[in-house]
Amino acid sequence: MTGPHRDEEPAEHRRFAGYLLALEVVAEADEADLVASVLCDRDAAMADSAVGRHVDRRAAMLLTDPRFTAWAQAMTEVIGERGFLTRRLREWSLLRSLALGEPWAAEDVTGASDWCQRMVAATEAVTAPDALGLLGARGRTRRVRNAANRRLQQLQQPS
Image 1 (cartoon, one colour):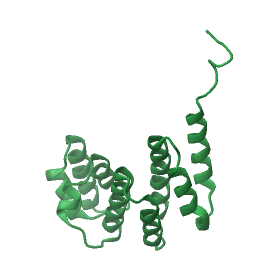
Image 2 (cartoon, helix red, strand yellow):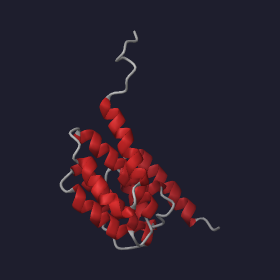
Image 3 (cartoon, helix red, strand yellow):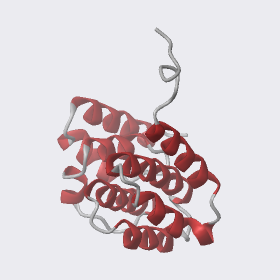
Image 4 (cartoon, one colour):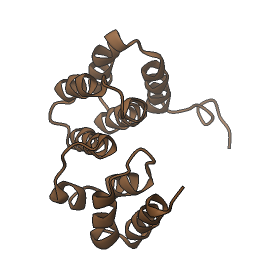
């Protein structure tokens, strides 16, 4: 069953791939404008997904970099009220606080998404024993609790 239109990739898939490529190579000075442009796409779910992948990639790169704060603020302004993206940026900021030993609140860690709790337990830059202990005891899933307890044990072993 191949016809002239059977093998064609849907337009939204092509746009999504194009957005991912553009976001991967965008200059820092043009990043906010490009993100805003992507978020104007008529397929909001696809746009959110493309920007979400970009946020994850950039935040991971900037996690302990001093430029993170300005970048996160710029993204927050562009993203506006988009729930998933707003939460993801907030959780990356929590991960940064944990990685840098900055103040954090227990309810932020225990109330974080499963994704964020897994990231806290798995991210090598996060070495906060209090946060890992908290997740080891009160993480939302068994997977998170086990991973946090393993990381805590690794941190406590002499090198």
